[in-house]
Image (cartoon, rainbow, N blue to C red; front, side):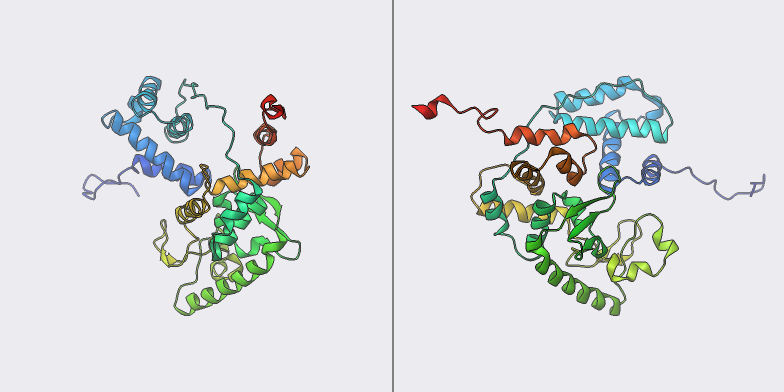
Amino acid sequence: MLRTLNDTSPAKQPPKLLDQVSAAIHTKHYSRRTEEAYKSWIRRFVLFHLKRHPREMGAQEVNEFLSHLAVKEKVAASTQNQALSAILFLYREVLHQELDFHVWAKKPETLPVVLSREEVKAVLSRLSGAYWLIGMLLYGCGLRLDECLKLRVKDIDFERNQIIVRRGKGAKDRHTPLPLNVKTALQEHLQNVKKTHEQDLKAGFGVTDLPNALERKYPEASREFHWQYAFPSAAISANWETGRKQRHHVSPSTMQRTFLDAVRKAGINKHAHPHTLRHSFATHLLEDGYDIRTIQELLGHEDLNTTMIYTHVTNKGGLGVRSPADRL
């Protein structure tokens, strides 16, 4: 409807910059964590340049910000690259400008921290309940923590003894084997989850968020048990997007704290975290003689070179060389 000369109603304000970033991220189906990280870096970039609008800036200002991060704040190369990714996303997807900027921080070539089989056993034995199950799936299936926590009941196939990872890194689905020694405990866990879900429904809750636009297409699906998270949180809270009260999945930070406490109690002096179980999964499969292509598929790596790093971890004593000191 056109505004007339006598129309005194306020003009519709254009969406704020960060709201435009959110819209672009949702269009690309990026994760919530990516959205939060990108918006945080873009906000810091704008504040660093005294709230100048990004349209007024370019490659020089981006370079100044990244130099500040590297020199003054001494951030890691991966952190600096994440900041650059966020800023390039802003210019490319929101402002529709191409920056002539292609300098990325070089990441140091470091080997992942890996736990021995006995260390894995020691850590997992100090976890209990849902946290033990999560730890077993991280190690037994090679899942990323986020992939594990976002598992739905329907993604666990007890008949075929496999787990289906939906929209993993790179928005790809994959299958991974379900450890047989966790099967019974996981079934019992899901029975308890079902009881909690039924109680939530009676209390007027029991809905969950659905991927893409499935809730509009199937309005009742969000209440069905098979769509619920396999590892729901202990409390009902408001959805960060809709404000609707529901039971989300276990918080990643909660699992991280619980895991670090188990590592400490096990007396393991390694910088281990939940993702270390995924590294250990790949390394132990290599030690058991599985081929690198199979492991690449199980991990969901797009590039074989990413998986090849585990071949360096399995080498003993530097390319399998026996130290001459052992012959003294």
